Image 1 (cartoon, one colour):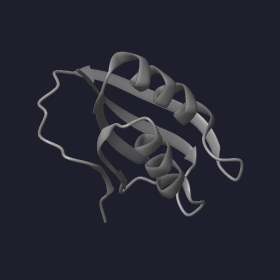
Image 2 (image 1 turned 180 degrees about the vertical axis):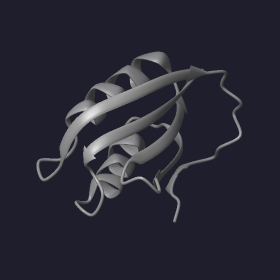
Image 3 (image 1 turned 30 degrees about the vertical axis):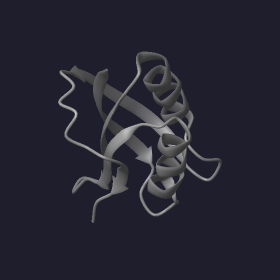
Length: 90
């Protein structure tokens, strides 16, 4: 079990990025959350198997077609197993 925290910058707020990432995470059986940051970024925490997380991070670097990802800051963290699903926080 691994855990990552991502801060995604670019044109990622108001373009469906969170809903898109939710579907990606669910398809990969990841748990965690995603939310809009106060500075027009998107922040997320995801936990799961290493290979699934790598696929998720690669997808997040591209995002949905209507977004433009400028930068993805990645922090590896210790997995806690605290989540039961992946959800959008408001």
